[in-house]
Structures are given as structure tokens and as C-alpha cells.
Length: 505
Image (tube, rainbow, N blue to C red; front, side):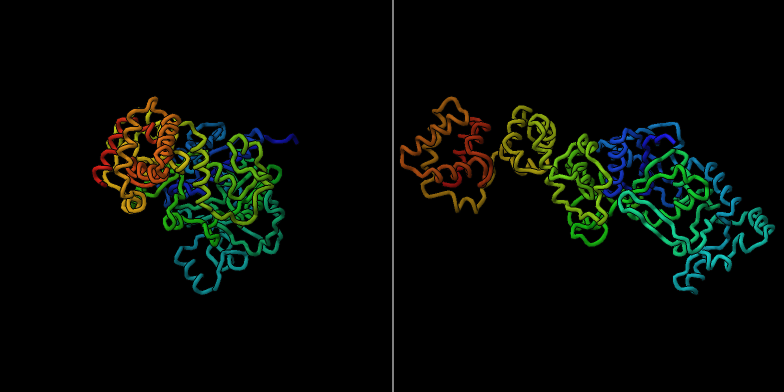
């Protein structure tokens, strides 16, 4: 048999925003597909009609598009294996349910939720399996005529898979190796519900993966317990030859490392767990997103890629192309990856420094204007160039360098007490005259001239510089003093120095 083209799928449920763990799963599928010249499919698992949330599907597509994780086919992208929404594939699933019933690998069960609850109360750790199914209301215990009558009368039912006990089921996992689970611990999972004429996850995924010719199923660790059932279903359908290879990714853990990462952890520690901001259509609650929090998509991708996988060397900064080239499932860890959100900020800082001053200025200019300040792009670009090394996010620039746009209205008291001396007003008056006379007003020549003057007068350099910084900035922060004067210009620098002398004198 010729080697099949690699085809992987990302199959989220539209039940809310896409968790960052789901983003990582999509990313790993994408990297694997692209490295092997394969296809990446988007399939929407909307078989649970009770949990459907309007807007969730569009959110998923927008989030992954923003991150540069692009699909080759699927919902919104087309393809030859559609439809790609499971709710639109009812007739396909019905045909396969009938096949399992006919072969005796599944049966119809009429037990009501109330009856099942009674069993759970009466039998500790009850599960619907080989040891209990013959005491339940199903097609294994009812005459065929009775089953047909109940269905004709419109009685709701489910179809359950029939698992035979005491068989070792082997699952070969590309990350975890050989996993062996005995069938006796499995229950007869529901595969289909007549109430909405839709299959459950277990049946729909197997049928879709087979019909869409999926070669590798890369998914979260939480789905590992369902893998033995999926192996059995492939066997029941006679599809062993085309069964995909499985790879179950480790969990993303809380920053402290104990337990699965949740939205509550983000709320508690102040970081997003969703790629985009999410507005809950039911409650109106707004959850933060990486995009709106100021992260660059390439920083999020780089950060997530290294949570549970390593490239085999010490390299941390990896472009999407480099990730595609280096990605290897055998380098995915078996144990959970601690979600170090501070490291995510570090990645964003790096990618911010890599961007040109002009690009960052375009992002920062609307923030400047939102504070009622009109500034030229060239001036904003100059300021960004001086200050970008001090921030992790573009939005942090304003608090860091607002003094370049707005003269200080007050002076930090702690800095004033430490830096403003009894003779500061007199010394800065002389300093103003040096600035007024000097041309050209660039950083290097102005700094050299002023330092020569300070030395000739026998003044202490620190006393002049610290007092001048307080006057220009309002506190003891900022880049080099003469970087500030050059950016502000001669007239504005002198104006600020004169005002400080008047107020602080």
C-alpha cells in the first residue's frame, strides 16, 4: 500500500471561546501537517446541540487566522470531504449506526435518565457495561417486536456500543508509546441519540476521521481514555488498515504546576487564557484575550510551541517557518507543561524589540491621540526608538514616556527631596543659557558642550543632570538626558526648565 498523504484535523466544539490549550493543539497539528507537506482540516464538532454558543465558531476561525494557523480545508475554507460541520452530516452517521446495529456491535437502549439515576444510587460506581446491560431496558433484553413498537411510538432511545469484557486493547501512541487498556474497565458508551438524531463525539469522530482520510489524530491528553474505544470502533467497521496514528498531548498546567490551567487561574493572576477577547452572549461577561492585551501573534505562537515540546537545542526564539522545520512529535513531553505566563511576556518583549520603530509608531500613535495629543508620526517614531526597550507591550509606552508629549504638571515629591538641591535653581538657570547658545542641538554635541561647561565651573555633574531630569520629566526616569532635550527641542526643553525653577525654587 502506497504511503498516504498526511492529513490532520482540528475539531473544536462551538461551546464558547477557544482555550489556549486548544490553540496549542491546533498549532501542533498545523506544524505537523506543514512539515510533512500535508493538509490541515477544520471540522466543527457541534453534535451537542444543548451546549451550542452563538459566535463561537466564528471566534475560533478568527483566533487561529490571527495567529497565522491556516487551514487547507474545512468550515469556511471548502474542500472535497464536506460537509465539515457534524450537525450537517446526520444521514452519514445514521448509515454507520445502522451498520453497527446490524453487525451486533451496538444495541438500542431505552433507559430513561431517571432510571439510570436510580441505578447509580443503588449500585456503587455503576456503569452500563457487560455486567449490567442484561438488567437494563434495551434491545438485548427486549423482544424485537417490543423494540420496534417503542421506536414506532416515538419513544426516545440511544444506541450504545457493545463492549465485550476482558480484552486487552493496544493503542500505539506517538508520544506515550504502547498503551494497553483492558476492555472490562470500559462502559458501553452512547454513540447516537434519537432525541436530536445526532451522534456523540465517539462515533462522529471515528466516522469523520475515516471518511476524511485523516492519517494522524493529535489531540489533548484528556481524550486518551477514549482511544481504546476508538480503536475498537475502527475494528468493528473493518477499517483497521486506515486507522490513524494517535498522539495525545500533555496538559497545560497552572502556573504553580498543580492541576490543569483554567480561566480562573488567568483571572486570579491577571493573564489571558483565550486568544481573543470573548464577550459571553448569555451573561455579557467579557474575558481578556491575548490580541487585545497587546501580544503579537508570533510571540504567542513561539510561547505556546515550547509548552510541552522542545526543538532539541537551547534555541528559544523560533519563527513559524523554523517551528515547521524542527517540529517532531517525539520531542513532545509526556508530563504536563507549567504555564509560565511571565515567559509569555518575555517573548512579547523580544518580538516588540524586533519590530521597526516606524511599525511600532503606527501602533502607538492612536494611543497618543487617545490622550488628546496631536503628534507627527516622525516624532512618535523617535520617541518609540528611545523607549521601546523598556516595555513588553506597546500599550505600556504611554505610562513610560508620556512626558515626551505632555509637560509635567507636578513633580514627584520623593525625587524632588533627593535630587533638587538648594542651589539647583541657580545652576539650572546657567544651564539654560548653555542650551540657548548651543547649536546644533543634537545629542552628542550638546552633551559634550554642557559637560565641558559643568567641568569648567567645578559643579557636580550628577547634581545638574538629576535636577534637569526632574524638571524635564517630572520624576527620575527616562533615557539619556540629552536624548530627551533633542527630542523635545530647544524651546520646549528651556520652557520646562524655567517652569521647574519657578515652581520648585
